[in-house]
Length: 164
Length: 186
Image (cartoon, rainbow over all chains, first blue to last red; front, side):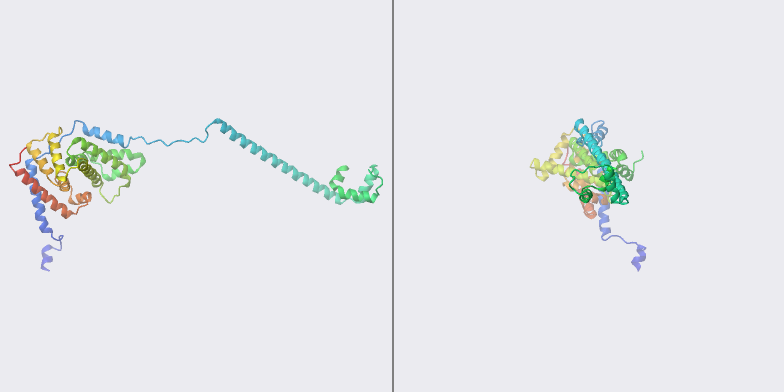
């Protein structure tokens, strides 16, 4: 309690007062040395520190970084033209096949429409038409039934429709 | 002239656009301090010149890795100190020189140096410092000439504050005795 009151609640590191004595002694001796020799005596060449800064900057800030090697993909203009030509050919082929496909769709559509129409036509009407237009059979030996069957088996309704 | 704060130097260095400016500020602030720190350890001006440049090149290359838990200048001092210790060790190995003879070599360099114009007393003081063991000499220089705090010297050398205080006390006793020894003259 009394110690605490004396120190006003403050504490010091362990062994502090033993080392304090040495620390003060060291400071005093150092001051005596400074009194004997105030400066060191070392010198530098004139303008040295300005030159030093420039030399350091040359080795750091101003040092050129090695440029990354550039590998060109397009070594010659011929390759460029060849690539362009390939692109054109592929595009043209694509366009051609696209249009062909569209035409096929149209023909299919037309065939379907025609077939639908022909469903409404009686087969006898078709036969009468052939007879009226004096269509000659290649082989007169065959009967009308045989002819009829032959036509229906070997020709599509579209083929027959286009004959009209 | 108002000195630039370390925080400003680090901030400028961290941005690509102002990196060079930041490094210039760092050089302006620390190059002389580091030069003299190195010069006192290696004595010869040309050796000190090489080592200072090497130090700042390392600072340039590694500053982006610097952690702010340490002080900037103690970090730079540490790099410079390690460069000097490496240099002195190589000198010993190259010449196959025992440790105590390195100090004698440095003394001869000092006497022969064209970049020392001190009087007899100043020369005697430098010779006295050169009689100290390498690490003790380092501690003495940083406390006596650079007036660094023991905590800062501890960061640089990795030695405890208590050991540093004891080492410095012994160093000043030796130097004082050398200086007051009338039998030693130059």
